[in-house]
Image 1 (cartoon, rainbow, N blue to C red):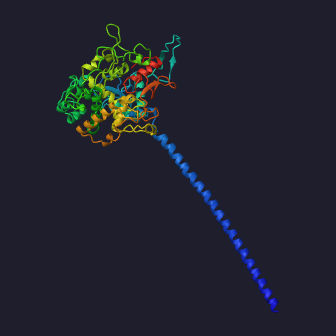
Image 2 (tube, one colour; image 1 turned 180 degrees about the horizontal axis):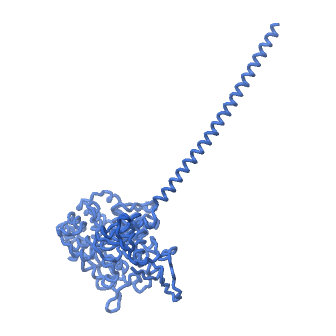
Length: 521
């Protein structure tokens, strides 16, 4: 009996255990199913929320693009002042080619921009105002649509467009938009020039001197000039120095950069034109501006005109002048930078006179006027892709990219030497005497002018600097070339052409030359 009772108890325990196990399994199964349902709902809800968020983002983005993106006309309200060829007084305003446009005078030339939306020119206030408040008389001008092209059937090869050619203002406005788009506002501003008649008015101590000249006068007095360059050629006078500074308002715009700029150009002056004679009684860093012309070339041809007979775009753009005997002019080194070759004389002449032929026909002008120093300041300001300008190195607007750094190109005085004469003095692995001279002279002028930027002393050598890479940050697009995708347009490129984006009027010249048209006002 006891055995039977024990068996019964064991069976009951076994049954209870099985029941418990089944209950636990069902419980676990039910829990898993519940959690799966929760996960599915979370995924569904999460997906819906994500879709809603993305939809809202896309709707907002498209809406913002629609309402805030700039049309071509809206962009024109932000156009920077450029020369249009129409003389005026600064501040003067007048109606544009329609009542929806206004022309404002800047730097002596009219610039046309489009009035803001729902505004037009008001002749009473000479400004853009709300349409319902404006008073403007439309003229009977017929505006030519650039898209309506009627090409001549003449097969003579002249390719003259009889109709559909953009007017002068459209061409100039296109130029400005391209300059703004490619970020050339700053560099173009740095090489702007003052009219020569205004430059001639500059005198030491004149209260009417341009602002940058006043900054230079505060840093360097006539006495300082005499101390720095005691054996200079008489053409390099203090007055000529100030006039050369005045020609380029973008040079020495503020005192900090001015101190560094003067120290750099004085060091290079001294290497390029110094006597380098230890017997003269002055340390070499004070022997600069001794020579006005390249030694031995003033009365003979030193080979700088050898390219003149060649038929290239360099001689087409800047044709060499000839002497009375029919021989070519000599374009040997002249001035503080010893500027040489016809293409440099021609470019410099365009900035000085707006005409390349002036200095190409009479290069001796450089050796007989304030242009002797102005030529060096011009070279200091001009970028030469893939090289930056020396100013861009000093003011920090040039920043080396990975390709520059791979070639050892770093900001500092050494880089300015590389810009001036890198092919001869740099990348040799050892320091050449010319480069050592420049560094020594720079340290003296750095101290005398109390330059604050100590970083300029960090990389004084260019011995280990390789050439500027075409992919470097100095490869700016500053030249105009034909835009093959659009008629009557030129585009910006980094390789050298005969049309410079830094020369006012060269975009117009590019359009006219490439498309063989004459743009009318």
